[in-house]
Length: 321
Image 1 (cartoon, rainbow, N blue to C red):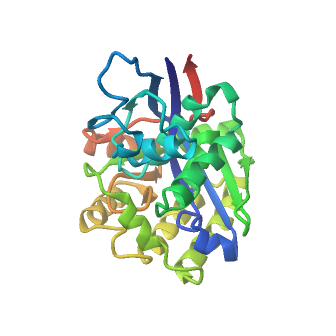
Image 2: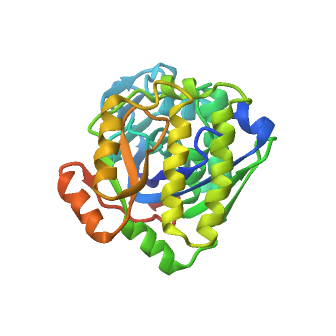
Image 3: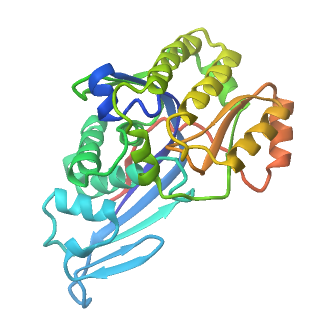
């Protein structure tokens, strides 16, 4: 049995500019980090004694005699991409956070499954990310960007630069360990209590390369990078707020009335700036508080949906083989 462990992520700046229709004309710069909340994939060869070829366990349980009949897109896509349709497989998925909540779970699943299926090849983070991008965006033709696969493969707190040809580079942010600790200590993550189907929302982001809101998001990402360089927490929080306001204008599917009301409450109690992570709709709100006492107050108000987190400095890994 092989077990892979793959982190989820929080994207701070640049979201929606990692779509090919945009970066192919303008490039992209993203800033964010992987968190210590993971998806785990257990993989083994399915013994022939069982009366089915493969079994996939997630929120549903599938047993199939033809791997092409697997309903889980990520599992079917990875298996088909690597020409493993004749293999007998048992795949079990476990997660620290709910799926379909903007944390990049779909891409973390694909990266983790590629890592588990091909662990003997010892793929580099770049190879894992590129395979996952190829599977999700080209083989399965699912709507979305390419940042989630990169965070899942690399881990850490980084900037991601995407060239117009789709090639990317990952660099650690030029900040001190003391500032990273202060920034994370001032940050919070709150679950809105709702999941959503992300592909329809993701498709609504694909408005073309001349979207002025996306251009503003890219500009704010570059300013945000300089704010990190200066280790200016308050400016970073305000820029996250401005970036979220621009993102909301891309599609009316991105922000609901309930999310707006939560944002208002959070600002009232000391949030400098925040955003709904992922493509939008619902899921998790990330924010930066003005002080530790205000963060504690926010924790008390939203204690049932508050999630503690740290940075995961490593990407997808094999923890048992």
